[in-house]
Image 1 (tube, rainbow, N blue to C red):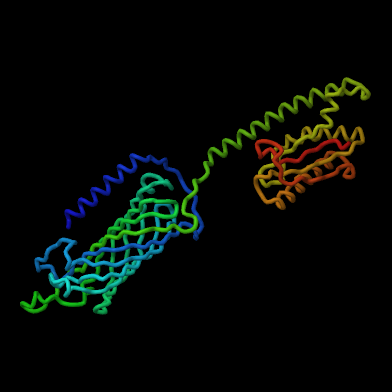
Image 2: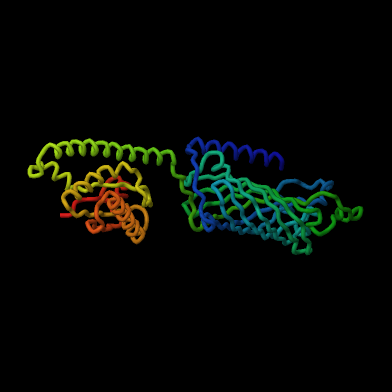
Length: 385
């Protein structure tokens, strides 16, 4: 039996290495799912080989394939993965088994069940990184619970250690190969070996134990996969590039504003050049951060102030239009957000000396007029014709 277990362990390690060589996986963090995600149920056919505490000195054959040791049954389990590498399952086994008091299979027959809570460690995900398409997952586990010998009405605490191998068929279904070692108190089998009728009964202070091999299916319930955590550094870099682009746009606008103001100062009002007229009728943008109503850069108000001055001098009306980006938030929320942004810029115009009666406001809600989408988080000011 020891040789069999050693060979099995070496084969598992070897196959795990081969599987990872064939399918390299980049490690990355995953987002935690809700409580109702990543549940699973399992159903298996089970084979067991029982080793009684009473047979210590009997010299019985140790092979787990012997008829006087083996039992057949089934198991069912329900469990949940809390992370790709850590999970729990509640497992119930029912068996037509054998408690070994002789090498006569008929004398050994018992019925028993075994209920355990088991902690699972998916070493494939823990050591090699999460991969939802991985064919084979190697999952050691350990558990504790209670077992009942129904034939002799005895109960014992029981512990287990094993290896659950799952082989992916689809996102929802996997094939199980579950190998376990179970250890119970010494009274589980409920009777005393009589040494074949020779020498009377005795008891040994050893634990009863059995090995089990199970084959069946796993069915994944609800959300069965894990999402990659967003790359915060990449998002920051993208946001910074957008800010830099806006700053460059603002610098160009300021330079153009200075040029046009010089042109206005050096020409009579009757001879305002066409480029100045285009500037005056072109909306001036003020930008906001995501879901905010405070102006992101107060420098945006430089062009607004120039337009306010022009409107005051020429008794013009101004139109302030608020926007939000359509990619985030509900339509109702974006409508309110765009109204607040328009009101925020209108208040700045009043501070600049524009009469409140000369300012009109409108809100466009969520839009995707500009690209990237973040440029739509703005309010515009223009001369109302």
